Image (cartoon, rainbow over all chains, first blue to last red):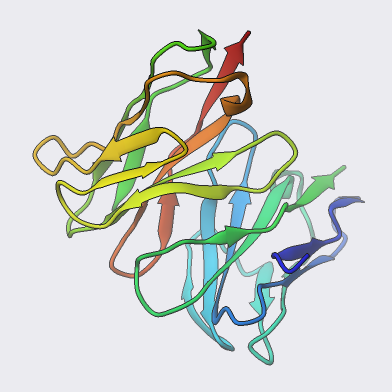
Length: 115
Length: 111
């Protein structure tokens, strides 16, 4: 399967712990996006990369959140000092090209539960 | 900022019924508009898109027309099937290339 891959699929952690999610995009895609989705809501934009450059960050991305894409391939999203409000599905998507024609290819998500 | 508002669900229909899911948008520029679908246990996937006013996107029997005058992009299907049961998300792509999603509408089709 050469789609977008995310892991772990589910993470349960205690409040205050750090967690890291990994996303492997479709190999030729230069854009990579992170979204957060809570129950009954649509995905909320967090940040995106073009190659290794992080071009946009949402106000939702507090200083406890950091994302990297060091070699322009896979990406990691780290959440430090997790809070119960961080419980959500974290979605990664990738796309090819510059423009807003925007077919995003999504992974199945990483579900975070903070106890 | 740019946003989309879509019809609240859930929507329950009988097989072969006509489907409409309303979506309206607010944008300062000229966004591209999309419908994504999420089947149970799967990731979101693109259903159809339209990149300019009066364009009609279509796929798998679903259609949506980009209406600038009413700022709408309603999703329609003439005859739904049980396999269409899913959550449908309206979305727009703004000039900064962020994709903004609506809250989603859950459709259940009963045999």
